[in-house]
Length: 115
Length: 118
Image 1 (tube, rainbow over the protein chains, first blue to last red):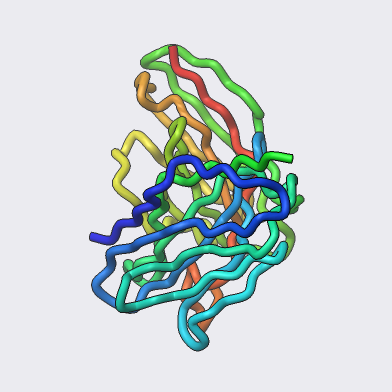
Image 2 (tube, one colour):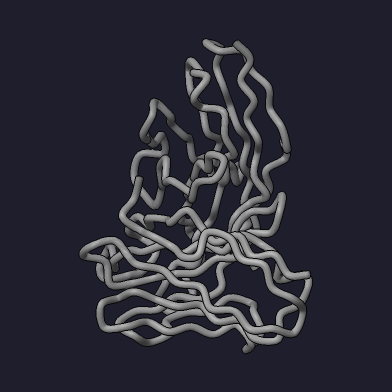
């Protein structure tokens, strides 16, 4: 069965600093990978996704992620964090099940941004 | 904000009761997925509906059931509520993406319904 590990429960960065959120997945076939963000009281918003092609994926809000098959990782990065980036971030792997890619989410990483 | 709406926003029920949660999908989307997000956890896939038929199900018991209507809005019903059913319930709408394969297109999430079971 597929699984996702986000090893960092909380990450604290200063505004303007760079950010990297870690994600490791386990899946026997080619994964479909996602990063979502959830602000307090809000639903999830897709930041970016990867299925094939260039392993460096650009997303919204200045985020990017790099797929590394050898490390089973899909880490999310941003060169300069803004206070509005404070939120919960979820990595997910989509496993093909009966014709649909069903996502399995990690537990999330809470990003705290200091001024 | 997405065009996905959910009602009610909050709900308090007691153990053993039944609950119905509602979701209106974004215009043009014919697929609705439901997720359960317990406190401090990531969302867990419950099931997906496409054109009024269940089209995929996660590891949830049969007391979790759903409906999709001709206008693609959806309901999630939970019978015999248990304390562990307390969670944020999210719905997401989408359309089949690459070659008609669900899950490859972007899912648009609603703000969720917070269910508390006492």
